[in-house]
Amino acid sequence: MSLLELGDASIFDLPLPTWGLVVLGYLLGSVPFGLLIAKWIKGVDLRTFGSGNIGATNAMRACGRGWGYVVFALDFLKGFGPVLACIWLIERPDYRLLAQVLVGTAGVLGHCYSIYLRFGGGKGVATGCGAIVAIAPVVFLWGGIAWLITRGLTGWSGLASILMGCTFPLAVWIDGGPKALLVGATMLCGLIILRHRSNIRRMWNGTEPRAGEKHAEKPAARQHV
Image 1: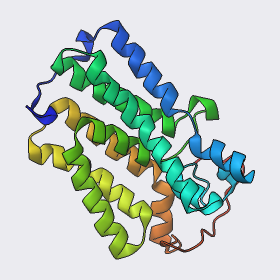
Image 2 (image 1 turned 90 degrees about the vertical axis):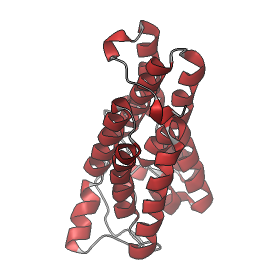
Image 3 (image 1 turned 60 degrees about the vertical axis):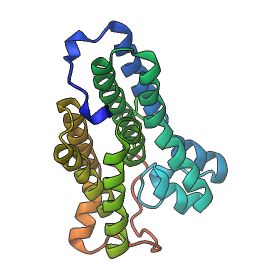
């Protein structure tokens, strides 16, 4: 039986140690790897460079393609690792799926609203992808296809990420996935859209850079998103 075929459980049924995993998921998700690596490699504060985002795309602008991939991998693992750990730490399948959704959501919230950055942060795409892969790889596959097509046709990574996020809950719904996963995927979609609101404004105004173009915007030092 696939993860998408498991039944739902109530959050009130989860044992206390599971909530400890949720807290740990948030704390790990809060680690700003992009910010730390850019500061270490180039002495650059990503919040004052390029788009001002602390994720892989802006880290790639600041430190080069290779380090951008490293940041993406680390942010991906923030979502993937804790969610995957639920498989070994939680025995009951219905509890396990709900715990995975909660831990994955906590990791994405940590990346977007990091306790270490006064609740500023990134856009949650890589961390959310990690969580989705650990729970339901087929859902990520459909989202990845949407990302590739959108990025290839428009050159806008932000739009590609938004449409990928919208594809996640749609894929769960079409596949008949459990309510917990549908709610989690919908929340992830909402967060991705919310955190890309500056990209949406720039696309609307015609100022959003496409792949390979430099970002003209220079955000203030206190801007975290």
